Image 1 (cartoon, rainbow, N blue to C red):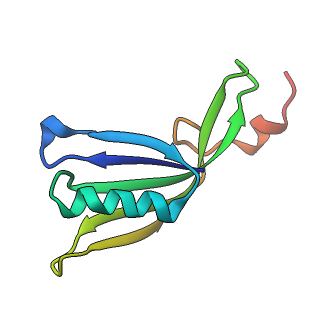
Image 2 (spheres, rainbow, N blue to C red):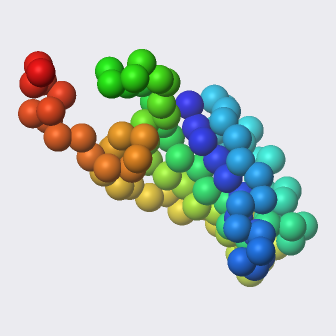
Length: 104
């Protein structure tokens, strides 16, 4: 599953649109249209997994650490850069392994 967001061309357009999808190539193709016509500055896609929180039984999208950032290139296309970061919880932090196995 993937979370995506489009970032605008100035500070007043911080997050233009965002969403969730399960088809990475289709998400990227749709975002490229907005990048190429100039209505967005940066596209970001985050791979996530769905988890249920033990604390409140709420559902969360937990980042796996794989991300893609897209920008217009100088040749009339879009350049996608894949990035890797640490996996984390819904707040973007890496969970403590001891806390996951510890029973209160």
